[in-house]
Length: 208
Length: 173
Image (cartoon, rainbow over all chains, first blue to last red; front, side, top):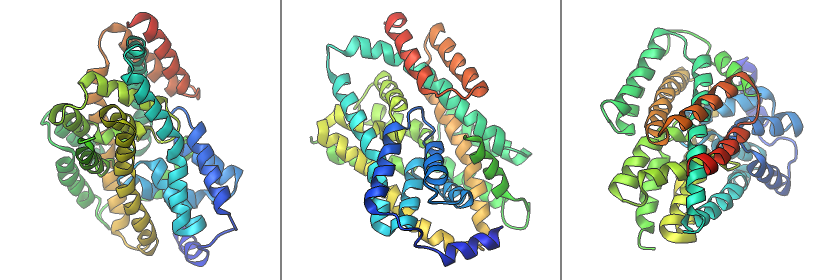
């Protein structure tokens, strides 16, 4: 599988002709309608199923790169996809387009929130929203955890990170450096051979 | 306006911590935004973060709302650029390099290692967030209801978010 993918990635960088206008509009639409959090699922639906600009395994590969890097999955995938479709300008436009609607939404929300008249209602509504957000985020990470945490070490590193943040009050970079470093070392090549692609496969597929 | 350089510094730093998603950066965001710079109170930060969950597109665009509240539209723009541009450039560069690293055995180790820690960071962020967000029995009920329903059905979460907002207007004022 990885052979075929490597050959394909080398052999076909400029894919089917996608115009910059098309690219911009498609990402703008995803940025405007992807309510409810799972932007990655919206991206997969549009880019793979609807537009057929990518094969499923190429989308999967972009998702796993996005997961490993800082930055949000949604914007990281937009950048990688934009680059593969239309080069540097494509990456820039895809990022801009997927961000624009949220930018206006959140800036407007800031204006309303700063408005003293609207405030008692906004505050009350947001108490409810915050509670639901806890439920939403917990269910997202519960599902990711259920799919990708398998062995003893997985649980150990997750626990170490949680304790580092919440009990020892360490800063995120320190936890990332120490626990992340130990985790990478533990999963070093040739010690625990396993096919990570398949687990991610399941995870992405479970999104929709 | 004089806060803009500090906003840019803080949010470009925070963006580098968002491994696996925005929640990883929440504890650090709370320390910097509430504790160090006093831009928002703890409650306000929870409100703004929650508003992000109602937005389409990247939920972490809530950083623009922080900027708007602290320094107006230019603050919003500064925060958005600071948060999305540095990691964007990094992703762009690594994205091109990654394909060349295809056979590199450490690639999978890094993916697996950081992916696991990212789950821990997200849970840690969520605990920090939940401690401030859940006050009283009704928020507990709303959170549990949302959690259970989303694990059992494929309903779009936005309905639970909006519904809980409506409940809040009547019951949490």
